Length: 329
Image (tube, rainbow, N blue to C red; front, side):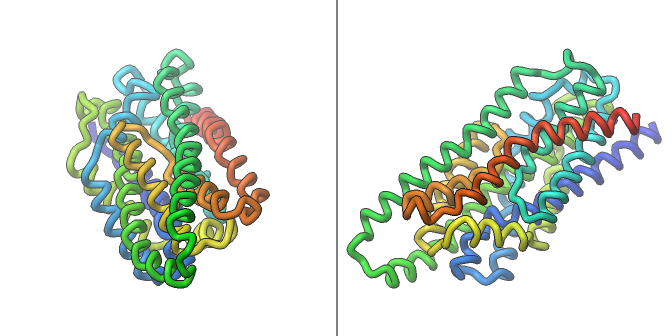
């Protein structure tokens, strides 16, 4: 029993470390546009994002249950704790590598890919719930397309409405409104992303026999929400630079459209209990908004490199988790 507690302690530490890294890795998702348009100073943007991430993380648990039981059944794994450990290590490694190079990759893809790879190597293909895995991956791949489309439509409508207004006055007004959409974006980020760590901790608790259900304990919710908020307070400046300045020159009206579009996709997914990539949602929304503004204004070469990273994350983290399981256990 004492050994189990120690191992669970390691799992909780790794899960909260993943959540902390996710916080500073994905801070850019919520505040890149508001910082780049100077709607908010970096310090205020990060503080606001940290608070809203915490609030969002405390309010929902549906995504956590999906993470905890849709890829595999923790009650049917004899080595569930080991699977969780290598899953988290692989996801953390990938997040740190992509953060170092300023690539806005998906923490969700990293976690799902690593979990599937760890189960595949550690327990066998028959222990993977392939239908659940495919449903999650489908949502992860579909959500960016929806965010792109919504961003394009929203920006097109705004262009039509404000076509005859002074660009200076329009952007001045939207710079104020963008504060609220940035807060909304940070809130929705918390409702979806923080639940992934909650789900993986709950998975470990069930696998260890500590509890027999996938309901998230209060202490897990508070711990994950706090880790996410603290990570957010650190900030991810390399990714903020990529998201906020390198895709295309974002003005306040563009930032408003992108934040609103991404937040609507993320929150809809949260209500449907689907884990989506907040990175994918906001990046795709920015691309959609940029395309509506002027197609040639988007730096499609950079966008292409980002998209390639999206597609390679799941197989790479899956292979890494499988390799780690083989080496460690």
